[in-house]
Length: 305
Image (cartoon, rainbow, N blue to C red; front, side, top):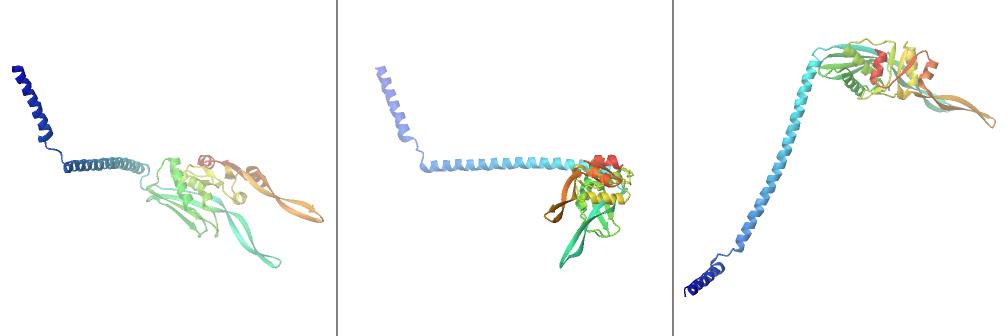
C-alpha cells in the first residue's frame, strides 16, 4: 500500500512538472527575438568599428614612430653639419675649361642662299668661391652666355661633399664663368667634372695643375661621362697652352672623316668616309698635348692635383 502511494505521488509529480513546463512557462515572443537580434547586430557593428579604430591607431603609431626616427636623424645630421662646416668657411679655386660653340654664317651657292654652321673650341675661365652662407649653389656668367650650368653645379657640389666628407650646408658655393667674348650655345653639363674638381680643391685648399684641363659630365656617383666636340676642345686646350687633357673614357672612340675619290663614268666623285679611331692616339698624333682617359672623379683628382 505504501509503495502504491509513492508511485501515485511520483506520477502526479511528473504530470505536474510537465504541465508547468508546457503551459505555465512564459514563451519567448517574436518581438523579443527581433530585439535580441538587433542588439547582437549592434554589438557586431561596434566591434567592427573598434577593430577599425585599433587598426588606424596602430598605423598612426607606426607613422609617428617613423617621423620621430626621421627627426632624430635630421637633428643628428644638422649637429654633424654644424661641426663639419663651421660658419665662415672659405675656399677658392679656378681653372680653364674647354668648350665648343657654334657659329652660323650666311652664304650663297649659286642662286640659293644658305647658312654655314661651324663649331669652334674656346677656353672658359671657371672659378669657385666658398663663403659662409645658407647652403646655396650659385652660378654667374660674364658676359651673359647661352649656357646651362646650374644642374651640373648642384651635382658637382654634392659629389665634392661626398668626396671630402665635408658638408657645405652652412656655406654658399659660387661658380663664376667668364670668357673673353660672348659664347652662345655652350652645354654646361660638360663642365660638371671640372666644377667638381674645383669644389674639392677649394674645400681642401689645394692648388691645381694649371697646365691641365678636362671635360666631362658628372653624376651623383662621381662617374665622369661623355661629352661632344672632343677634337675642337682638344684644339682649344692646346692653343691655350695646356699640356694635359683629361677625357672621359666613354669618348675613347673618335669618328673622323677621310676624303675618298672614286671614278664614276667620266666624273670624279669625292666622298667623306667615316672612320673610327682611338681618340688618345689621334689627338696626340695631331697635337702637342698629352691625353689621359678618366672614369671617375678619383681619376681626375690623381691627375689634376
